[in-house]
Length: 124
Image (cartoon, rainbow, N blue to C red; front, side, top):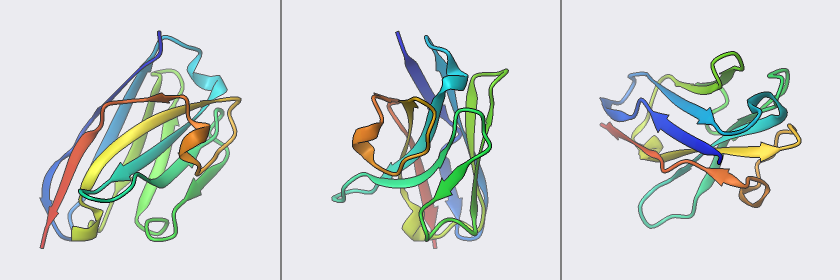
C-alpha cells in the first residue's frame, strides 16, 4: 500500500534552514503530484507547496514562496522541502501528501495519501 514517511524536522532558531524529506513507497511515484502541508496547534491544516509528477510544475503558498523550495527525485521516490529564513510562524507539523494524476493542487481534499508528519519548531 501507499506509504509516506516524513523526516528532517527539528527545533531551530529564526533565520535558520531545514530540509524536510518524504520517502514514498507502494505506488508509481512519478505519476503522482506531491504536496507539503502544515498544521499549527489549534489551526486547520494548510497548504505549503506542491510539485507535479514530473517535477516541471510547482506551486507555493504566498507566505513561503520566496523562502521554501519543493523538489523531487523520482529515482529515489522522495520529495523535499527546503525551508530557508524560517520564522516562528512556520512552527507546525509538516505533512507530505500524494495526489494521483500528477497535477499540482493546494486543496487538501485532492490528496488521497498522507504521511504522519514531522514537527518543525522555530524559536525567536
